Length: 84
Image (cartoon, rainbow, N blue to C red; front, side, top):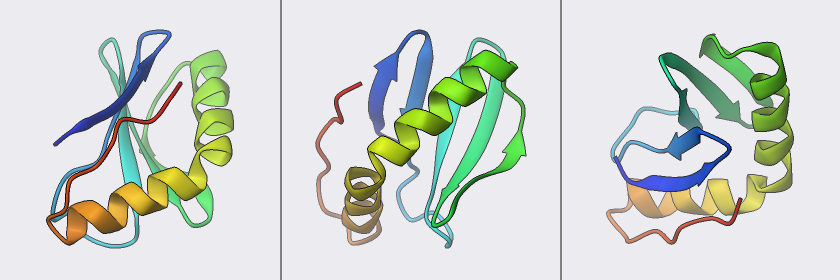
């Protein structure tokens, strides 16, 4: 499960060989959340409101890069870190 990015205490990762639809996993302290990429929406878990908003804005801005990382991981190819 490579860590793609870390910012403001939020850690973003995608599990290799994970199930469709494309999604990310994020951690903030003891909180966990799963966010679908197409469309961008929370699929499970909980983040404090301000952190959830911050994460969702970041996912929308970096959606193309996240989808590319998802495809690479599903095809056992390396992925690059994504800027905060």
